[in-house]
Length: 379
Image (cartoon, rainbow, N blue to C red; front, side, top):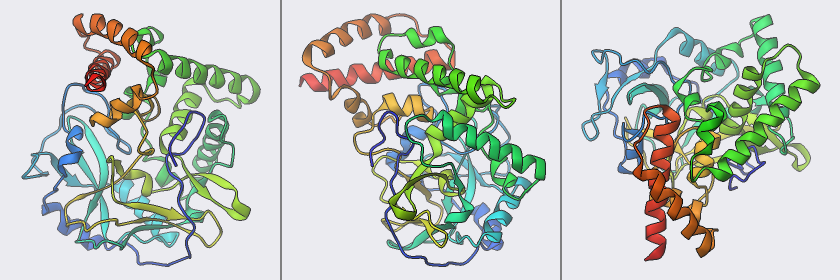
């Protein structure tokens, strides 16, 4: 299912039967510290590049560089990484185990790409067709069926987090891993940019949708504030747009879910992995290997569909997909006159000196990507 404006989900898992798997083997986490991560060539956009923009991860930490003494490196890309064995992550594993999850083939690793980027790494060889992750549907955070306004499910999320914190339930181990409001993940999303940063050439539709979402946040707070701030709801709305999956539930209803562990998988366009599952009492939500995966490789999924462009990636996820098709998709629906006008404004904009802030750097990369897409379209 392609992600479209107003939709909350980049994926639509299919129906499956329940299959119960084993739980993680902690010993594998220790053994995997010495393993080498083999990022595929198609994931090159994850390495430090033109901007300091947040790349898709789960719970990115500080942007401050840290010592690499305890980290391994990929021989092919020299990206340092280490298996995450922090107390908060082990508590999260305990929550998954308590719920009957199965994920013994993978673990959570932190990749050093200028800041800490979490992702999922294979702890052993995985064969095509194997179930990589299997999470019971009741372990997911069900945010309802509303798909027209993300601020509704966002309020549901904030209430769930408040209840979990007040009662100190095991679910807090998952909520603590969500990206913080000041994390690198957040900085790249247009919801958190100053208003004047949205006025740059090439961002017209992105700016319109971002401002509409801000208006929805303000309206929702007026109706149901409940002590939450604009910052709280803006953050929660972005969490909904960037992490919620749509899953078929009872009687064919489509449920909006935050699925622990599965939402830690990073994006790769054309990833072979398959998402499947049903949001029922006995359902399981799975990532299935669509190809053989070697020990040490990062396990990825695809956000959106084949027609998803960088206009959506920037606004909804807070990163840019550096593949050419991600820019080609942005201009594919434009007529020749619109493309010509856009190219003229972009040429002027990209000739000016680039700024150093995250919105300025991201905008410059986005504009240059659009220019190259327009050049390809003329050929």
